[in-house]
Length: 309
Length: 245
Image 1 (cartoon, rainbow over the protein chains, first blue to last red):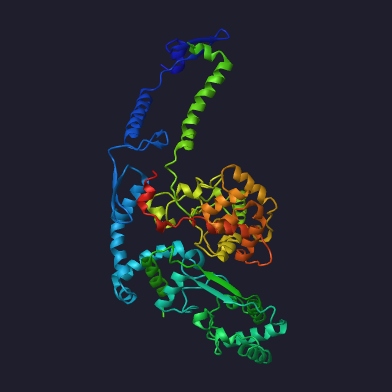
Image 2 (image 1 turned 30 degrees about the vertical axis):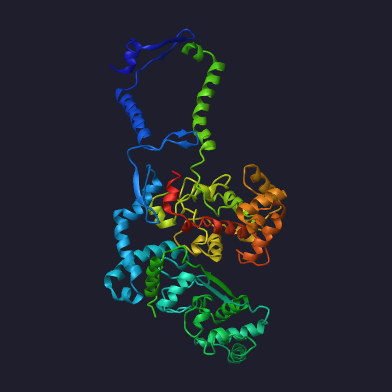
């Protein structure tokens, strides 16, 4: 028998109300399964209110019972508190399965010297997998997921050029303390012709063909008080690592995108622009944000990215 | 005794009774918030935003950043490992409205302050793909070219003061801030010097890399760089925070 038929035959009850004489309202009972599911949620709520923090009372709230959490606090003392997600997290971070495994390795890394880590294949495997995550979260935003950097903004870590030095100790210092790379702007010091001369000399250092006369004038500016470039970039143009000064004699360009064009005139323009505008780049310090062991992992990882020195 | 039929056939009565029932539902949720005091952690360091940060926060809301970015690190292990310490109630006590959000299309920003350099933020806001190739965030290039309008910053601070944010106007309020936050911070919370303070912070820190002007980029980056940096977590035992839940 269909519902429609049942209703027309009066098998379904109505609420008894009648509007406009003949408009009636059916009074269908709720499905049994639905009703019992509803009762079950009520029972669940009652049990939940007893076990977990639930109701506000005055200036505080009911704390729940029978499921206290015992955890080891930062100062080493053991504390017990009513169930709450913060205590749960502290316990998980200290005593959880993953946490214990990770601590085991982390403490091993923390106690080891860089030489020991580099010589131990197991610790290196751990470093590579964990530091990859750390790098992705903390470093990749600027330096790229593969450490390739962004020309003009953030240095490439995957090549063999190290502005601040590529030894383990120098990479560690860079990550822990940060770096502030600074080259003054020469827009007020040099006129357009002098800019062109210096740029010509700079380009010639890495073997780019340039105008010989301009190059000779540029060399004089570069190597004397007039420009003073040699103070940081050294007379040979290889750059002082202590100043983060770029090596100008190789084919690696981190700020002026010289390799991005084949046109000598555009190359000159790009170098001129850097000399004229100067450089200000800041690498944040991570000693407050990351633990010493994490910095160690990242140092080894970054050192290895570029082949290390 | 009111009969069901009387309620159903009397629209006025039905409205009044419906309002009463709905109010109870609302009051049960809202009223305890005015009385529960022991859920807000007593931590030092949390201060109201400086005028420049405040304008940055306004721009954050204007551009709808909260639609994709939450500012609430939850107390779970995965979030702890990715973002850092979970957010405290105390950390958003001066936020009106709070920016906790409910949708993470982009990453959580509650602890983004100090994580990246100013130059990164500028490059990223102008075109996110310049620094994060796989990003789907829109470009916000106009921030770098639009001068910051701070003509109404005092009015904005006064409005927030009405909601309980301790910006100062009178000497007594200023003295109270000196006691609570120290003289340096108290100066920045002084409504009467808001415009000078804003200019000074923008020019000193030069967030946008344009020394000669104060843009919306200056304000937004100033705001982003202070997010989640006010509390020094090394000063507290973790168990202390668990007492507030």
